[in-house]
Length: 86
Image (cartoon, rainbow, N blue to C red; front, side, top):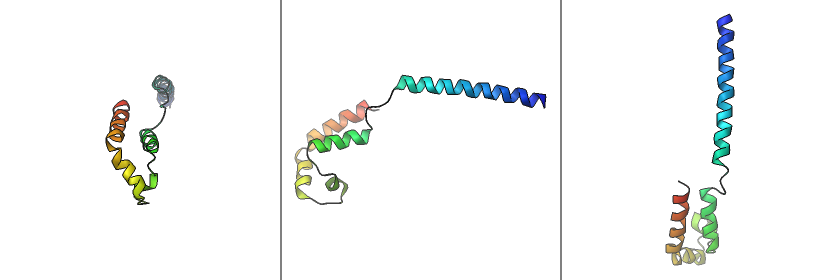
């Protein structure tokens, strides 16, 4: 029983240390400004592309033309986002 109690105390100490390390890592990492998908959505909104159009729910020709018409700019901006968020 004594060995069990000693082992339990060691486990509690290890758990406490692990929680402190996790808190430190989270603090150092900081909070991301926005997720990758949110930033990509913002790029597409910038070019006035309807979300339904590029998700296939609404085949609005105007939104599709906007996406195709600005495809080079859109893909360059998405490329920057993806490389920044590695």
